[in-house]
Image (tube, rainbow, N blue to C red; front, side, top):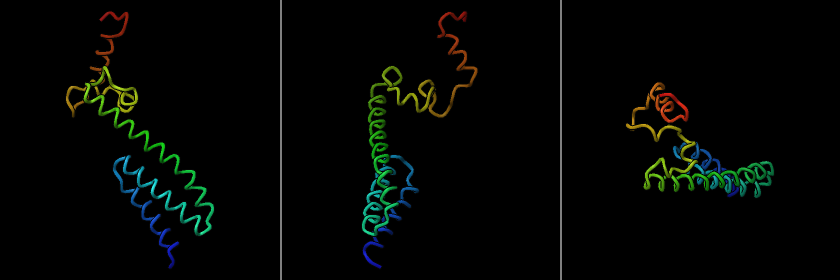
Length: 126
């Protein structure tokens, strides 16, 4: 077994490791390393479909990594400044109404959310 085969096995192992990740930033970083390893393996072994596939996946993984880093940074800023008045829209899209919850582990009932909505709705009689 030559070094090209070892490179292929290392790339496969990196792909396997990505499936064991629980958070997005390490997953994207390992996926990028896996893509680079598979591109190298495919080029050296002259397996062009592998090169094409992982060359296509590499920019997607890189973009997702950048997006997650920006989201984490904006979440830290929002947490430090006190959400929801300065909460970025990207965070509010993730979990709408979680900033309304008083307790960390309880969620307001549907009726409570409707009462709150009726109080702030323009033209309501409540």
